[in-house]
Image 1 (cartoon, helix red, strand yellow):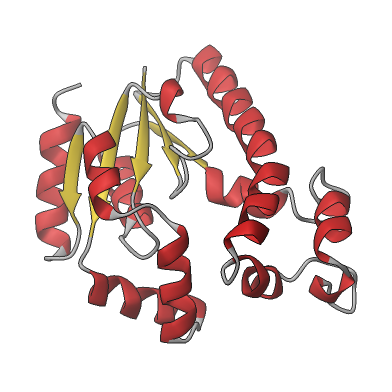
Image 2: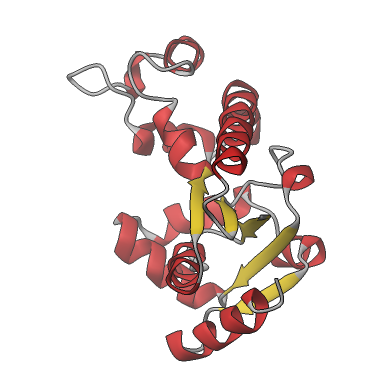
Length: 197
């Protein structure tokens, strides 16, 4: 059972690639991004430390952390982003590793796919057998994120700045998928990769 890391900038189409891998193989998917969102919820391990660090101004009327409000703080100031990462990255790594170990014991899958823009930054690259970098040109990514998240172009670009440059993703990858051409071309590229394993 191979562990595949799917990396790429926000809006590159990592989720689309993973969805297609699932269509072609028995795949268990772990989303580092979803884990990161989950640990910010009330009662979860990062909730109190994040509020203590960034203040109650990031809470909604029910006391939940508003990720958009937190993002406004951390994506405008690299030091604030470092603080958030120091609180959340160890927890994300721990949970991803726990899920990988659980899945390997099940022996029901061809692949375990771990998705996340920050896989390399949080130190999860060492757990991957294969790394696939997903590429889309900047304009395509901007449009996708604005549509999906309701962000302004400025908000999208601030998130781009907080992530690795494409060349760094490409350098870390065993395979590259260009997800900016067409879905058909993306599917062709995915099939060529998965049949090798």
